[in-house]
Image (tube, rainbow, N blue to C red):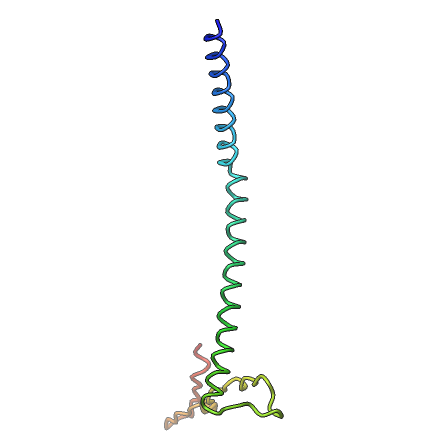
Length: 116
């Protein structure tokens, strides 16, 4: 009798345990849960990338300072800490005057820019 009670209790406990595990796994596989997991992974990856970029930038600054010291290129105190970028380049302007073709009976004006 005790043997039957033991195995019945063990079977019931295994059934409850298996049902709980299956239900948890099913909840993890719902579209909402998968979307939340993906969003969490994306945020975590973004933080890791930001940390990596900050580490790279700190290393760049440190290495630039080392090279500046080695080459004797110390920045002067009156120079600005950060240089400004030069202004945008302007393209050379083509001759805006229209081309004129002259025929014996009249003058025809042709502007290539009007074709577009």
